[in-house]
Length: 349
Image 1 (cartoon, one colour):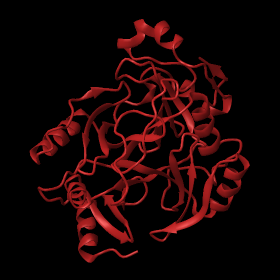
Image 2: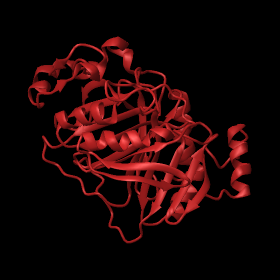
Image 3: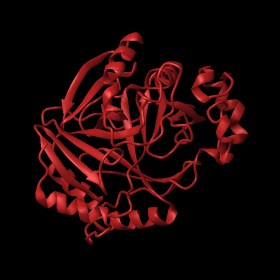
Image 4: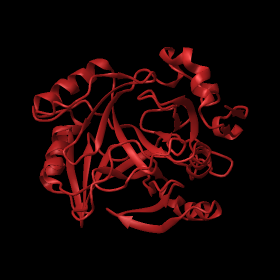
């Protein structure tokens, strides 16, 4: 892995907050990742038993008219940067088409000496994987969600976040949170410029891969490009088997408004209006390569509607949907949430 000297210097400036006028300086790293899964129960089993995250919220998709679960998985308290969310779309019958212009891989940090454990763990659960490989000098294992989503566990001992552990996965092996994402792009030049505007710097290249990091870099602050010029464009709609968007964190509404105005000033006039997601506020835009980016606030959190020790155990709806509870829940497939998935009693809905 080679890091240009000018990139190192720019990285030092970013870490110290000495940014030029052509860079956004509010993004702290990832907030969450959102993908479209298949069946709700297989998704819960996969994320809580195979990946080993805590289920922190059961709710529904707030957009459109189709009743679809929105399931959240994270560390014990739902810390931004550890959160994975899914829409199980098999019930609706919509399938996505994987390709460029999408998040290709969702990557999670684990201790570097735990990869042999992860090979055994994935084998024990019958999960397809590609064995231990290496990229940018770091070892990782690519593995696959039942809906075909691509994930990795990557060994990075710089990640000191406290993990959620399970009966099968101890703290010594557990996922720390989101490490990085890999974006599949047919062309990269305009997307490279966009990442610089967005506050990231290019720190490495390796074959068809490019690495970009924000602030001091490292886990939770890395976006990789995979240049795939011959791969067709993937779908942008909701649909089973695709990652819908990647969300980056700012502190509050004020910072989000600054980010929106800043990006619009560069000509990205398709930045959405703020959307209330109950647990955070969001704006969205597509970067030049087609991947949907979200900028989400970190100052609300998942305890707004239930205590921390009960998160994930019950169906929670925002105030504006509460009067439709019976209608919505009746159209969702029944699920069972294992006791160990939330730290509380088993629940169903």
